[in-house]
Amino acid sequence: MPEMISVEQARDLVLSHVSQLPAETVPVLDAAGRVAAVDLKSDIDISPFAHAAMDGFAMRAAQLQSASPESPVELDVIAEVAAGDTFEGDIPEGACVRIMTGAPLPAAADAVVKYEIVRNVEGDGRPGSRVAFETPAKLRGNVREAGEEARAGEAVVRAGEVINAAGVGFLAGCGVTEVPTPRRPRVAIISIGSELVPPTQVPTAGKIRNSNGYALAAAARAAGALPTMLPIVEDSLEALKVAVLEAVREYDFVVTSGGASDGDFDFIKPCVEQTGELLMTRVNMRPGKAQTFGLVNGTPVFGLPGNPAAAYCGFEMLIRPALRKMQGHSNLQRPLVKARLARDAKKGDTRRIYLRATITKDADGAYAVEPAKNQSSGLFGVIQRSNCLAVLPEGGEGRTAGSLVECILLDVNEDVCL
Ligand SMILES: Nc1nc2c(c(=O)[nH]1)N[C@H]1C(S)=C(S)[C@@H](COP(=O)(O)OP(=O)(O)OC[C@H]3O[C@@H](n4cnc5c(N)ncnc54)[C@H](O)[C@@H]3O)O[C@H]1N2
Ligand code: MOO
Image 1 (tube, rainbow, N blue to C red):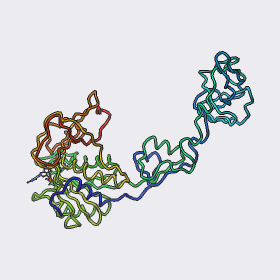
Image 2 (image 1 turned 180 degrees about the horizontal axis):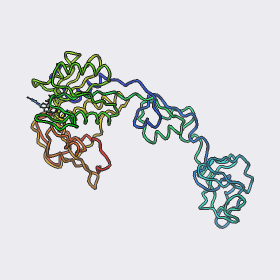
Image 3 (image 1 turned 45 degrees about the vertical axis):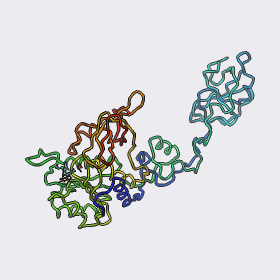
């Protein structure tokens, strides 16, 4: 096992040890954001029938061929067809049918003219009226055709596609009420540290609240997984082995935080080594050099460092892609954009640095990125106020203000102007 590997090698290593989970079937409404495990087919044509795209009048277009303002064509309105109704009758020469948007186009008609350009000659345009047309109608104008979007039996969403909100509606229209989708990974979150107390307690001397467990559970949930926060484990090799061996029995992926370094009380590495197979211990990134990964009884176990920002970056770069792969996604990484640094970014370390930063777009659409002043890896609040990680590549050289740097967009919400 090499001492230190690159972020890409680490990501590939983790990805190579996870696979897409078996499918479960969920109601179509719950399929938003999830991946179709099979081709999903429509049971009917979409639309099921040709219908009016406008409120107006349906007729044969040929009847209006000669219509002009000087010599309008007048037709008798013989019936009305609303959405949900049908008109099966004939439309004789000199007649038309009043029709509403969504109503099936009568078989005897081949065009719809919207009511705004039709003049009432007698009556109010309802059946029994006589109406005048001053322009010819386009053949099949204002008609939405049967099977325009899909044919019965056709795959409307392919296996591997991510279903969005519009897709949920599309599938509902196609009669797909249940969707097979890879099930969500069950993720165990174990916070390691004798200094940790739950957030309900006020910490006494030397203690701190467990915030990593909460951040990691929230991040796992945001990645589509089902996280469970297991009890805090004290800094003891034996206690950690018991907790990890128990977790790998029940969960698809185990994430720990803390105790990943080489201190006297750092036990995740020996724990994985003694209970399973240790595959990785260090990644060339900052924050978050101490990243442990291995398999215990075949289950992936990932030991994140204890420093909050280091745990967060390790999760984002190395765990989130794996959780997405398990759910059938093929785009595993966050979007990247290039932005100009708003100030100099010095580099006191040759590792790849992920600067917690805020990206904005100016009036011309150009991106600028401002790294947070405090880049301590002990801080979560800075990430709460950031919207990206700006990347300073491996090597000793920093970047000066105005240089273009790659930025990994984090959970960007509507409050952020991008
Ligand atoms: N001699 C060296 N010491 C350290 C190095 C080093 O290279 N040489 N690296 C430092 C860096 S950077 C990091 S990151 C940590 C990683 O070590 P551990 O994973 O063993 O982290 P811990 O010692 O357990 O904790 C570090 C820090 O984070 C706090 N922590 C831990 N768990 C939580 C939690 N659940 N919620 C909130 N905060 C947590 C913990 O109290 C410590 O303050 O090693 C450095 N040392
Ligand atoms: O692993 Mo530490 O938090 O680099 O920064």
